[in-house]
Structure formats: C-alpha cells, structure tokens
Image (cartoon, rainbow, N blue to C red; front, side, top):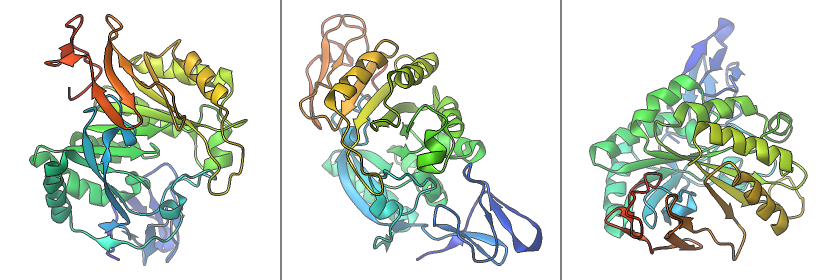
Length: 333
C-alpha cells in the first residue's frame, strides 16, 4: 500500500497528533490508527494508507449514486477505496468500509486517463463512492483537478462528515454530491454511527448553492422514520432550497443491525410528508414505485424512470416540451 503524509493534522506534545480532516478530531499516539482505519501516526507524522488504493471500480448509471437531477440517463465511472470515518451499525457497504478488501494502486494521472477513456462508454466523469470519499482526501485532491482540466465531472457520494476548511478547498473541483443525512434526531448519530448530526448539517449548508446537491436518508424502523422527524428534516432542507432532491431509501438488514425491512407504507407516508415541503422526493429500494420527474411549471412529465433506466419523454432542446420553460433544477439536459 502507498503511504503518503496526510493533510490537515496538528502536532501536539510527546509525539501525539490530532487529525482535523473530519469532526472526529482523532488524537493519535505513535502507531495509533484513527477511527477511519486509514490515517495513522508514525513518529509524530500523520500518514494516510489508502492513497490511490482502489477496491472497487465500475461504470454505473448516474441514477445509482443516486443523482436524479444531474445529467439524467448518463453513466459515470465509479471508484472506491476502503475505510470510513463513521461506524454505522447498519452499513450497506461494510465489506470495504470496515473490512480489508483487496486493492490495487492507480496513480492520479492514470485514474484521470481511465476516466477520460470511459467517456467512450457514455461516462461523464468520475464518482468517488462505495466507501467514504472524504477520507480519500489527498487522492481526490490530486485526481479532481485533472478531471476538470479535461472537462469531466467529479461527484462525491459522501456521509458529509468532513471539516469546513478541507471541504472548501476541494469544492472548486467538485460538480455534484449526494450527501447522506442519516437521521434528523440528536440521538441517532452517537448511538448508531459514532458521529454528530450537527456536523453533517453544516456540510449540507456549506455546499448548497455552490454545487449540485442531492440528499439520501435511509429510513430504519423505529430509529429515524417517525413522522415528526421526517417533517423536521424536510422543513430544514426546504429552508435551504425547496428544489433540493431528497431520496428516501428503504432499509434492509445489514452488518450489525438486524431489524425488519422498512414497511412500504412507512416509505410512502414519509414521501407524502416530505412533499409538503420539498418539490422532489423519490423513494429507493422500493420496487414498483414511480420515480418520475414532472415540470414544476406545468406538471408535464419530463423524465420517466424504470429503476435505473431513464427515458426523456418531455424535454426538448433543454426546455419542457409542453410549456417551454427551462427546468433549471435539472443539470445537464
């Protein structure tokens, strides 16, 4: 594995370092490893061990990220490494987030070239996904400017658990992100994720209006699916931008949390509540549900979806084919 000196840390007394990349602020003695499992103290210097280490690489529909209002119907090369700076008991990708998957090394320039070559297969760029990309920070900061130089898009699929300064430094090279807001109550994050809700809220508030943003919330029975909580989440998002896309995803048992899957009725009721505040609310992991997009101006069908298959039925020359108003809330049409 390639080890490079990490960015964003402080040297303390007696060889101790404090990582300030994310709100965990891990204090590490010599040879200690942070919660993320990739940043460690070597004699008073913080190193990252996942630089350029690729565990997963695939060409995915952009809707799988999920991003429904960002270049709909396109594909994007998707890469992941290993590790995570949260410890969610319900992790859907625990094999790479908390396990030790096999990896192979790819230099930043090689990743940029590979991404460019993927355009022949319909890709618009590169998504850093599968595990938490913020702890892949140094590598992303090396790759993303190369992608921008080539006119390619860079996407983050993230838990939003990153400090403000490194986030602001990275944002000029990022085009879109999907941020997990895992719950909207103060107990959920410390009990199930080893984190804090406020830090994630600050990330969402810091990126809204700067790049394209969509939100995902996995609804877990009895943990974060109460109607008052859904209402508060939706009201908060609407105060930032009523056109922000909210994806409500259905929980299935995974990793250390073994609860029954979220009832379909709960999902549909949550969607109904969220739509009182937000213009675009979609459901995930719920077979047969309609996730079409309609014109905000006239109600005409703009985009028809069948799982990840997208049919553009109502957009011509970048405007609604019925009322001829441009749907500015959809990027890349």
